[in-house]
Length: 361
Image (cartoon, rainbow, N blue to C red; front, side, top):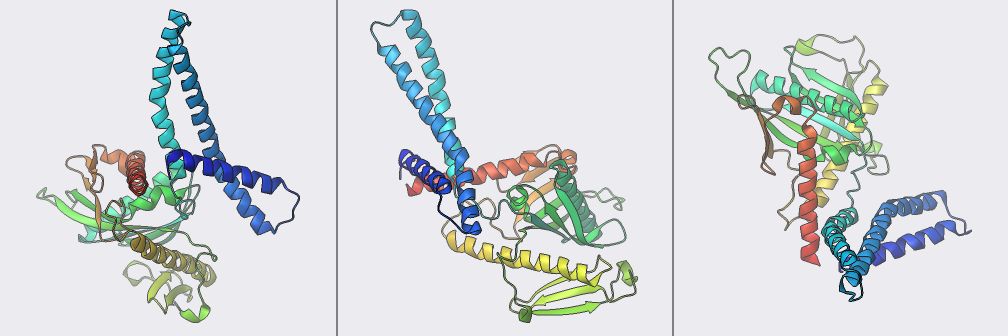
């Protein structure tokens, strides 16, 4: 389907929805909400389509003035100048509309569960995992998102073995979904007396937060164990059996929570993480099925894929998926320059998907 035919279809659907919503016929609240959301989602696209068509009409009028033998030469000159300026802007407007028409990822507007784990490299890997966790916390603060720490297993030396957080706000998952994978660091550890550069790694997973309607979990599929919380080195955090371990029997997934003193709160947090992991696993399965023959994905979803290197001696951060290097490592780790990487990844993904649509047309 060519672009104009697609635009006609979108405008027609928007008009149909407007008529349906304005009609007197009664609808179930859920159906009305669904139609209203589709109508509001299409509204900005229709506005851009109308803008494009108005500019095309304006372009045709200018072309007519340029070829009109009776026109004043000065007016013809102005018309020609305006014609070329307007014509150069149309491709950008068409691309903007094509981006708006790209199929939406159903999870893009969801909140996210962030999980960071130390990988190879011992205590240095744990320190780097803590750096990454703080980076995302600062990034969330800059975007006015709520960052709630759910669980932290620290080493007692400033590093973390693993940590998880719930990030709540507008478009969280859309911004953070390409952060999943292995992040590698190259730097001289504070404990290294010879100044030798070490390489270590941490794994990041960003999962869309799932609702009950996204993933249904049967109680019979869960084994729930309670035990006494313990901190670093086995020190008792509290003396009650408030920690919770939930095992999802069909998949073998295990989630453990012990940060809260309340067993009920730990269970709720553990279920939240379990639901997100199950939802993410199903999304990955569907993505792999759809993309079996496609190699242009920016984020493969493979947690073992090395996606980024943070090189301290050179002050650079390199994203290997898009070959982008920024020489501002301090600002990236402060969350301030992370958007430069995130936005480039989103743009690359959009370009790849536009290319696929063009190939299918």
